[in-house]
Image 1 (cartoon, rainbow over the protein chains, first blue to last red):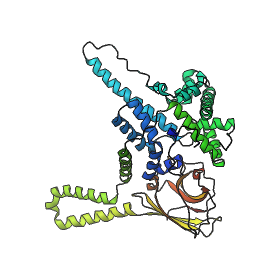
Image 2: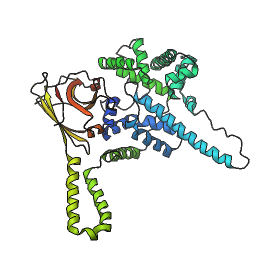
Image 3: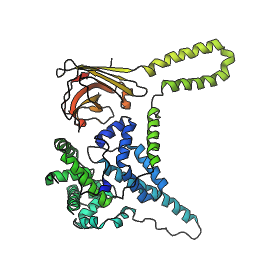
Image 4: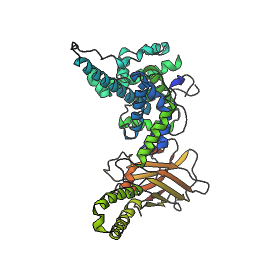
Length: 194
Length: 253
């Protein structure tokens, strides 16, 4: 890790094994490998879970769900980084839990006399993170085109596959890929040089 | 930074990896680059950091107790998962419970002696299936003609013991890799050689290794394991599986 990168986001170097090797060992049943993966990524997963759920107990439940099912996950270490997979999965599962809770609340509200109108609970959870970006990050984002930002948001916030993004935006898949990748490269260059 | 920035093309490939959407052909290319240049891993970490600092939440350390809770739950699930062969110890307990219930109904008719004889017979019939270890003997190929190794697996708890002798000393940055080659069409994720990386290890100055570790659950199905082999691989990426077998076996003995 270089000195330029935000230190909060650096996983602690506790072993020379790669995430892919640890996942392999975990899939072979080795609990120690799970411990190592937990040490590397727990703060990422818990931070995201807590941010969306806002309740420590629910965030802890989600942590258990994520880490105990990691060995059986469909994650393919060859296609991408484990941290991105974990971040997308955690946010998605957390939002599902909030929606499920809101849906139950709505049902209770609707059952009350005089409460027939729809309660607006579709708050933009996916974008709740944006308001807290530092000035440095906002300046870096400003270097990206709106199209690049949109595709990165849809990939990392919404967890959509690039073919799904291509379908939704009616764009060729190659265009979506290029926008996401070029946008991320630009972000990395701007943040490292600032 | 002391190192130079990778070319734009490589940076775009790294971005694809960090975003988790490499195509299979790109994934192969990325893996090759990763093995050839350690700076790629640093670049991955920096690009990951850029993505997370822009779109992620502030990392928060979870409560200390949670780690132990998760690891304990995982360890317990490994010793007795729902779809696993029940260990012999527990089988005996279950037999005792079953026999207790049966005895309550039939004990008068059976008589104590018959009951004891019958139970002993059941125990004898049950024991060999659960406790017989699987033993794989690996012989040296022309690359290591005097080398030999044995892998002994307990199919109940999946604990394995590897004993290897006369293996050549390892060059710096290399490890030995134990591979399990599985039958074609087995419902498992395998590499391009049909193998699953099972364990990495090193040897002492005499070329010996004695290691205990856990093997994947598919070892319980003896029809799945086709061969066991040992190769030399890069310590940083043993999963690349570029080495040729130094030792190999065809069948369980």
